[in-house]
Length: 289
Image (cartoon, rainbow, N blue to C red; front, side):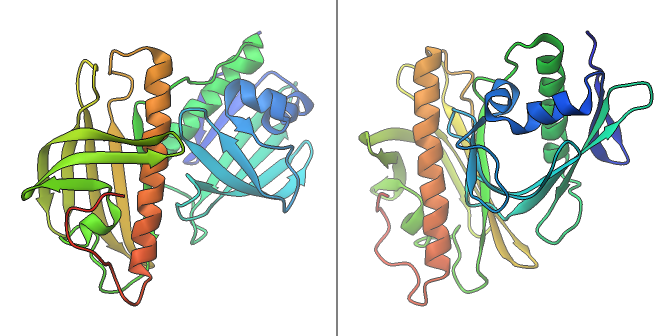
């Protein structure tokens, strides 16, 4: 059965499906089916109750449904990695003349405006294409490992500058050998581990880039961090890419990606805490997380 192809309508990700609204509703709400094309829900969706959508590679959304009206409308507020600014996701299912269902997704930013960020629109088109494949075949269409770990956090307005020394070393888990950053640390319930840093380039208050070596990998991973002002404060963004190009067994790459994702999340939370602390950052350069 051909369930259709994703297409954009009025700048909103949408798709026309041959499946009836009841079948599509089940695919986007029932945990067993959502896990086949999207991510793993921690519990059935219930209005007002916190939930988590986990992708298995370190990426996840924390979410809270705000409206559940089967088989027509589903809305939830979510935060990527549990730290990004909240956004509202609205699913609308409309019966098509002659059968089938039109699905439209609206991703509203914290200020209520519909998102225009290309990466988010592309992401939703990809997810809808996976929904199409799942409903067409009944087979899993989830991705196994995303190449980039990325995220952001909005810091309270104030004097804290996360991309300036020594403030940088108060939240980023980096150790200095002499005057040059040499090691990136991950510390979690599996214990500490350090990774060599190369090509460290810092433009104070603007951006940071470096590579992080993974032992046994075909090539290093690449990191970049940037800061930019906004209406609600300073936005700190990071991208850490190269996870599908390591040349390591899939399980090893996935486990490492999870640990690095957890470390980046903890680091951004530290930056947010430091930005909100009246005392500001403490400690000399060279600290590790």
